Amino acid sequence: MAQEVLDVQFTKGPFLNHLDFMKAVREPGWRADQFLEDGSLTRKMGKNAIRAMRRYLNGELEAFEGVLHAAFDRLAIGGRCLVVIQSGVEKSIVYKFLEMHEQPPRGSKSAASLSVSRLCQLYPLAATDLNYSVNHLAAEASLTSFERAMNPDATESVRLMVLEKAPRTLPKRSYIQPLTRPTDR
Image 1 (spheres, rainbow, N blue to C red):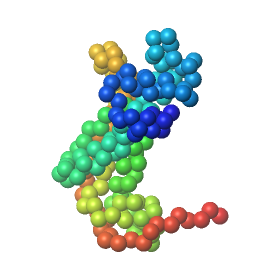
Image 2 (cartoon, one colour):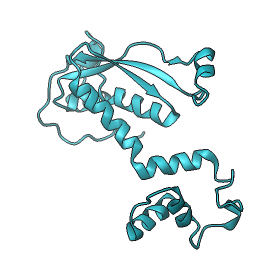
Image 3 (cartoon, helix red, strand yellow):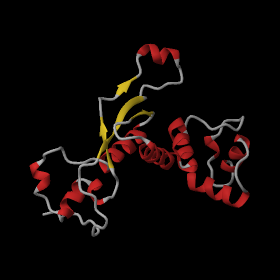
């Protein structure tokens, strides 16, 4: 569905309002039972489908990831960033960001004994020349019942995460051979 909307935008130009969008999705190939008499989408489409389409069309998830990188590029070492997460997809992006910026614990003897390629597989930061790592400081916080009552648009899934920019202790790599995954045995 999202790809068809993109195709319509490519041929007819961007949507100027929600009515243009509604006309586009009513084009041949769309099922009539998805619409009410006033032209609005039925609940069959669901909020999640519309949200997913909006995120895809607007590139919101890529932008969210880009904001994380930009924020940590600007923070000083020791600086903290409060991240508001509104969905499981955003949560997975933050955890992937943490994984890509994680380094082994200080004084880890097992990490010191690893080959460079294995260290880069376990800690992707080792394959970069970034001068910082990122730590997750505390457990995720959720909104209290009072905060949800004060903001009826807030959902149960909203979470807050505190991330910290930490100094990098891994040696920087200017060039690393492409990573290969170990074969399954």
